Image (cartoon, rainbow, N blue to C red; front, top):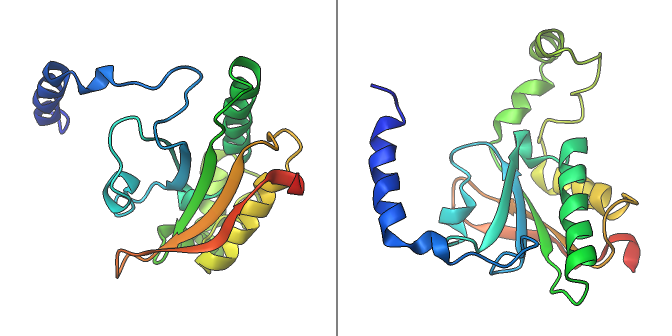
Length: 182
């Protein structure tokens, strides 16, 4: 038996419920106007700690919740779709959420990081920026990375937050702002 088999029964109940019919209109404008970027850590589930429901937000997950080149591409794409297909808006807020006790800190160990670089084909130092050793600091860096990226729509807003895995609370570190101050 596969680990997913029991979940497929839950999927049948979900399909029968019809909840999935309550989808936002294209181009991917979630009900709450949020695009959340957070960590792959299973303790960090924004549907749980933010109380989200189906189609309330776009949720993307990366190691550490870091803004990678692939994430910049995705954020750029969604912003471009809104500008092109629904220029009247509403535009979305990108909420970047890092967390305490992040497993990405293990990449601060040179041996582990270098071993992963070799296995995955990264070059020396490609991953050195990835560890979330100080979540308030790294979330500010990532908000700046998005806000200064020329391919990101200046019509969206970007904010930065830290989720505390011990208390369950989210703290705002960077209030919502527009890229490039526009």
